[in-house]
Image 1: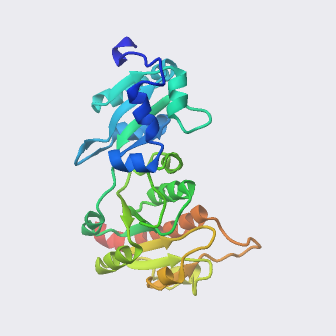
Image 2: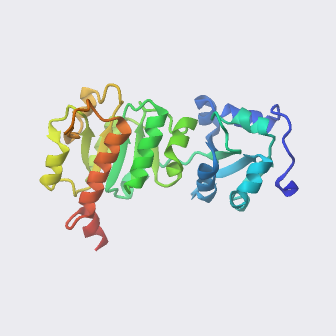
Image 3: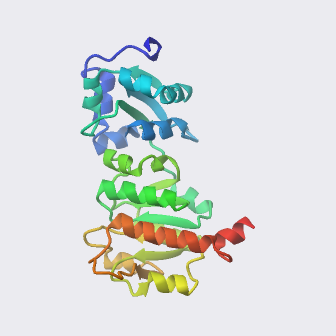
Length: 286
């Protein structure tokens, strides 16, 4: 494996120190770089390209990981990334997980301007407003990807999507669909409405019931779901921006659903309605 480059013996290497600083949001923002850990995230990063070029720019790997994931190492090299063989201690110093998997990539930011998302005429969008927990943000992004959403928008009041915990929780989905960040919620809602997208706020205290929306046939149109903080939901001013405030019905005795579960239910409800006969996806694709 010597062709992969010299082994980084010391955690004091300048390149290792620079990667370690990416754990901090201010440094990520300054460098417009973030960390992707583990084989799934690194594989997706190596395959991803944007208008600015390849997303993966650097990869640190233990000798064991480089041998186990030879295909990922090859993909990283093919993407033009600099590959370093690293001591396990180096990976532990860079990694933010308790049990590192031997691969840590340095990636370019890949967020998409909100205007480009609107120009693509999206049909299903997840808007994260006031979502502060990075694990929740990453999991909702994963749900949106699985439901076939066209984009995810994080407002300026939400967590950094490049937080290592958010990247891990997305399980590679961060690299699959357009993501806009730092958009004021008022601007996000107004832009989506102008683009012909119906905006629904998901809230347990909503006046409208998701089952009723489905029964009434109103879910087949282009839709954006606005999701709020798991602990205290959406502020009244944000709820007031939406076309409707919709609750997921609780048929059993559970007090509520967590954010990611509620997001999955709402996004899949829209996805199913849009793919049904007469839904906007069927019309568009016919």
